[in-house]
Length: 417
Ligand code: BGC
Image (cartoon, protein in one colour):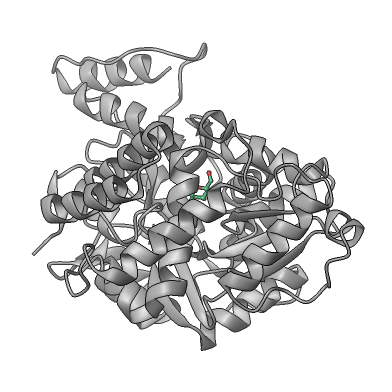
């Protein structure tokens, strides 16, 4: 479908076009291709809610779904790179606020949206800190749809109860390791549900927050904290201990497959971002439990899904209307209620959100905020790729010293100074 659109516009402009086709029917001038990795479960439910709002707010415009499945965008980001390289970008694509977005800005792949921020009153609608994080050389290139929290442990309360574990969450990492051992002793072979590289990076980051504190953790991505120090050595050791309580096939599972272990009662816990809240509800574990990762105290590890206007968008009016919907109070209410995240806007009432989301809304206001590398707010895409490769290497080598050395090397190579 995109090919046809590119050719139609190219014919009008009298220029040659390249790209590859896909769908069956040609888009009208009012088609907006929205590129995400929200293809099923709670993620799809969130997207559907946003699309319904878009349909109501943007008459004459049609949504075209460019989603590419795969948690954290592992496949989508690669496909996006290919499409941009062959000058066939979607009209708008999902990117993480912070360092990851800066990669696209530096490459000239997204357009400046600063004027829309002024026209739509978005500066005052979002927290000042978030607007700062989105601003690069005085300009803003994306509209955040939400705030997700990364450092949350989800539980299957029935599994914990069968092993006689108290409903109160473990107070620190030691206590958590103790509870994992109790679950295993009670016959739960893999008490902690684990998935592939980036999900392990999330676990490592949560452990680093526990062992280094919020400030020490944030400093790992600014150059203020050394990756070679003893606190990181301790954290890598704790991370390895946690992995030993997981499922052996972890490297081949995406997050929903690891989550399945929790839903089916084969695991008691899973560390995952709060897209899991919506997904557990969508997949039948509405009675899930949750707590902040043990030892993370009052730290809220955040990330934000933001939408861009791609350089070379074919439908300017429709893309503008999509972005306006994303940034609107009604759009943020409908989308986030279904997605598990909380609105980035500060003026959306908490009514209609789940008990988990209401607790996240309160924490977002009071907790210390730190960014996430696995989800692009703390580190660039190449840096994230290097850490994921280090974790994949660890899976076969099982050498914590080598893992720490690889992490330090990645930081040296990719830190923006
Ligand atoms: C995105 C979320 C998404 C999650 C799992 C994260 O990188 O920010 O919106 O639900 O990946 O796919």
